[in-house]
Image (tube, rainbow, N blue to C red):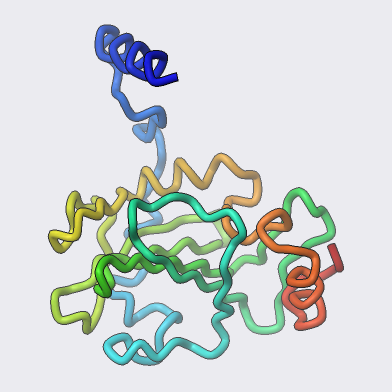
Length: 198
């Protein structure tokens, strides 16, 4: 297996291709620049420095999280008031316009970035917010950052985020039927998060 990976990498370099398997060059990220400049201006926190999260935000943990090289993560779903996730199709949950998905990355106890993906009338868009040194706020960073805060954590560009998420019809990767056991899915239905039992 290791030999195959090395041969593939050498072939890729020999052909003059990027080693990144995703082509993000055609991804339109213009909507990302319309998102708030600071995380404190979004709907996640009532107070960013004190980590006071909006009580309407639903914190969740998927069964199959993506690997993030030692970073710990927290995730939140924030639905528009009175709206539900349409779970009638168990293979493709549909999220109402106005849905916000947040994912926070922490290395060695320090918040490095918080990603926001939001469903707008024109479709999904998203961007990462990089936390400042004093942890009082995070700044919108569509261009991403390598080794943010010296934490050996690379923040992806908006194009990379959107290209990866676009691989799913629902756009959302972590909040899906397969990511929760039956009891959790039932609880979300009873709590009014899902439109139908799954």
